[in-house]
Length: 302
Ligand code: SAM
Image (tube, rainbow, N blue to C red; front, side):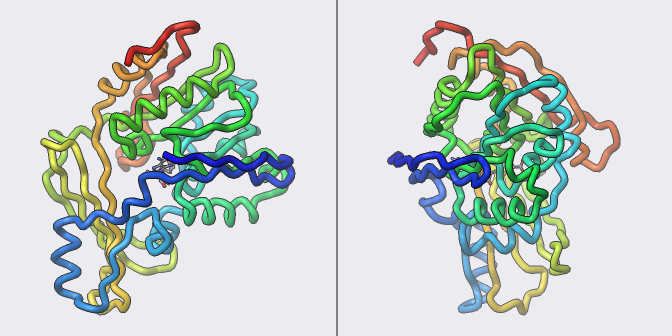
């Protein structure tokens, strides 16, 4: 991975930018379902990744206003009352960042995808000045980043760790270690239900976007590979262009992430199940909040 860094600017104009080549450059995955759809719509078909330029309209329409407040509160409970600057990895368009800022935190939000960063900045521009001034945006690959400051806490939400393969996760742990203050915490929310064997092999559901457009979400699981193929497309079969967004995610069990953290030189000091509210089942504990601290002086195993 190449890594070129520009100088940090003032917090009032938060434009600290690290440009990195990363996973998104590989282009969209041609899922089996996307293949079938594209064959049937002919020239109207456009294939894109959910997080790339073409997919960004769909991403914003479906995700922009998703509320991460219950999950953000769970992180806040664990970080404690005076967190100092907090690093949020793979921040997306700020589902958790905005609740963090509302709690009074100072946040450095790191995200790889340029269109997703643009969406984040648009939201930030509309936020009250008090929130804006406490947020720094960094465009970088979370598996190999270098930011010119240290943090009392680093957080990563459910789903985001699963964006990385094993080598990427090792890079993430090493980068986080380098950016934590002594005694700083690394907190991860991990989905408990997202284990490949426990998922139906295929499911389909309709999703309304903020614009009023209706989408179809198709998910297929490959248990042997521990991956999940996501295909999102318009419910309106006559749409022109017919934008088919795909994304392949891993489904890494939470206990494996915990073992990896230990090998990477962290002590896992707490594992707390909590209800994110995303399942729609009140009180259903679908997530695990993992709290890790650096083993000071430890040399991580290769
Ligand atoms: N944290 C947000 C949330 O909870 O809503 C976004 C989660 S979304 C499942 C995953 C995010 O990870 C996307 O915004 C994607 O662009 C970003 N991403 C994927 N690979 C990345 C990488 N290597 N470095 C930084 N961000 C990455």
